[in-house]
Length: 104
Image 1 (tube, one colour):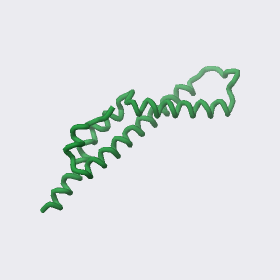
Image 2: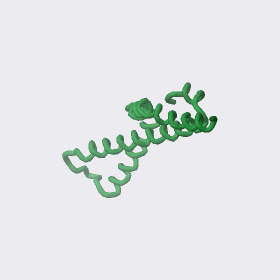
Image 3: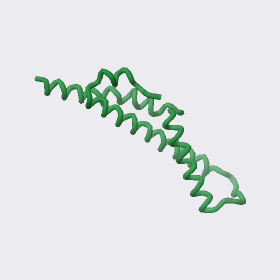
Image 4: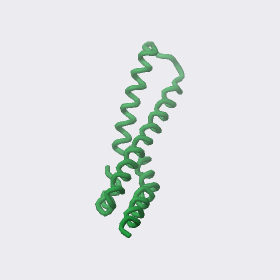
């Protein structure tokens, strides 16, 4: 899911790069949030399983991280989209102001 594809075509070249960097950072933030949420859910288990060990925990954490990354890249929770709405205009505005200053 791409956010603001129409504004990318009208933004100056620097704004497009800023917007892409913001999109990447927003998705990474959503992935970190999901990892923390999954870790908190896993730590809430009430009993120890037969196969619980440090190796099992490590592989489970790696699987959770991969799942969180995948969910964030698809915009599952919408956190990245919300961040793009909130900060997207701010990322493009300074670049367009700089381009106007250079034109004068």
